[in-house]
Length: 227
Image (cartoon, rainbow, N blue to C red):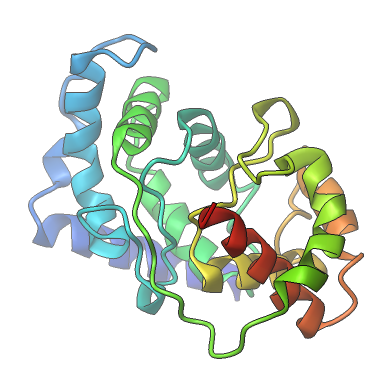
């Protein structure tokens, strides 16, 4: 079942790349550097053309394609997630529809240089303000109490902590926060072999007893964006 799904999604990814003339990206020369130099960003911008199919030209995301806003995310986090997708640590669970789309996309990156280049480019993009898409909203005051556990890694201001592998949460799409928490709670995400930080997240989200609590903590995170 999972093998057939991966094959189908990989074929789809190949078709998308061919249709927008991106097949040449896989063989194009790239500069061997890990710094955010102009060459890195130029290569990253070229590679990002493929990502625009789902994440949009501005990196603002599109829930229709299960693609979250990614513009302005730290390079270290983008790099880590691309590694996880490419290795199969993340995105190969049969119930992870968004992840199963990212897996074949990540295979287009030739190696470390391309992955670092696109990560640097995404980090250089202007952050967006995603539309609120959840039909129900939570209680930010209650969410502050639940968020106390999250702050141990993500920070009191939800700005993230690279030392803990915790990305910033402010500015993330509300639907993506909700679906990510749900995936962690069900083990769809965070249970992959080699996922260093996933088990901790599974433990953390277990402190949220129900959907109302999830909506409450998301409401608190969104309130931080307004400060």
